Image 1 (cartoon, rainbow, N blue to C red):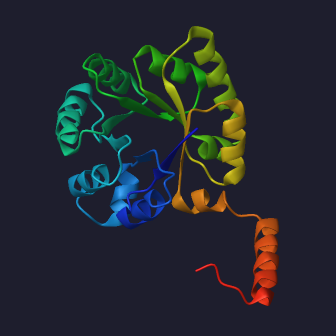
Image 2 (tube, rainbow, N blue to C red):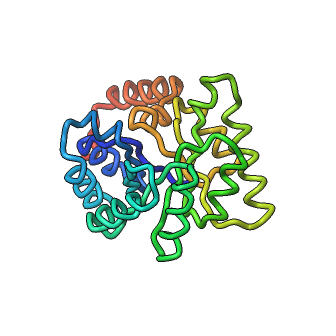
Length: 217
């Protein structure tokens, strides 16, 4: 499973990249707005920090303007993936860009049939939103499972990018189902390493080591 970090905070991205666990970055207009910085500057900086794909989202809602924005965003780094909404114009843009060899992340997916359309349009990634799905009384993990089944039925190459991750259990369940990627906030990525028995065991080891009075270096 690939781990993408879901933030526009370059300090957070740098800290996560230092762990050697970041395979890419996802951003959106809301995350960049929180940074208080220029949209294009943030995308360019992030693209220079990681080797994997950086999803940069268009803000237009019509196909023609989406294409113009995508052209501009693609100048910001060789690892830019264009992020488009799952709308008819977004799918049209996805098809046009994917035909030109541009990786496209189709976002705001809330049904398996939407995911099927994105795959047909040539999407490199489909982003089903687990947490938001759960928020309105649906089962986000069932959505991931349905998409996995459909994509496997027809051998689609589109990668399932589980988004709107709220906690470590979301990551666990997505991995068990077979999502190709999870994009998660830095806080959740760090939580994956936490376990009280790990902490307890380390404390015991360190206490025993201290009693020896020895040093390795």
